[in-house]
Length: 136
Image 1 (cartoon, rainbow, N blue to C red):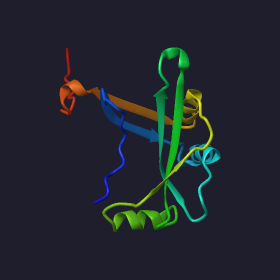
Image 2: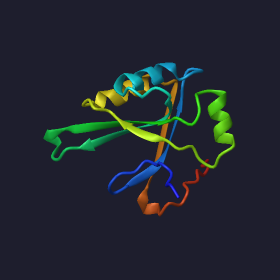
Image 3: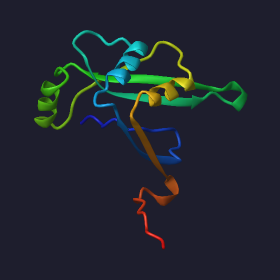
């Protein structure tokens, strides 16, 4: 059975979730991603992965990896929603950028959103949920 796609790093010192809101539509974000990776005809963009990787000592900097997840089982919009509603999963293919990206590209990606939220918890809490307590 195929494994779900989730964020991961070598050590996973922090793990969490990300939530992104567009501005009523995802067109600016969609355009930005498609400028970096050209999807074949018949594929619908359904997700993306942006990873920043250290290239050794700090003086060497970081490299960025961008991948788009796209499907050819349904077109965007209602057809894709109907497919997802009627199936256990949505099969995707991974398309990687062939150009070198910069960490500033991640900032550009965030600037194209209306809201961006990332929450990560230390692996020292063994995957237990963090629960906010009210203090007086």
